Image (cartoon, rainbow, N blue to C red; front, side, top):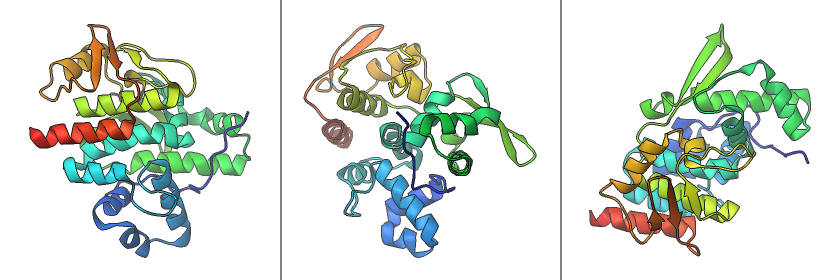
Length: 256
């Protein structure tokens, strides 16, 4: 069954637009964008869990802006939302495997195969993806991929680990995976090949040793969110949403 991706035109999930939305609001952001740009960024905000269908800020973003000060820190939470909310971002994570250099010449054909769309639409989706990647200004996000150009065209992309991953990011991701996929036990080194099945390594790119250190040697460790663990796996509690987990993490952060 073809996956439908629409609403982005050629516009990417631009970091500067997201930053304006977070700290100045939707009206300010849209006031200096054209109609096509406004439509695209509004769709991106929906897909990233930052805007609801009444065009109001979500509870998720209110928590992030209040308790997490650094934009790159906030953006890493947003990446979790994008994996399940944006089929284009999910495609990027599936197509570009962490630690591997992927030649981009077949990207348009891959988008056509996934979506069943026209060649022109696939070109637009490719441009939207490229424009998202090229918009990163935060060093930790810039370093998460190495982009090779041939003239003005992207020739290849090598996905790398995202820098600055914290306990809160991993726990939020685990609870979102539980909500979307029904899993509560996770292997630290898992990298599922199934399309649409996420993991810590698949999204953040960090290895199992790094994951263990972040989760279990952190001052942020939260026993109410981690049910059990050993050197190779972690289990979380059922019946807790990712938003509830984020609220608990934020309150724990406030108490530090």
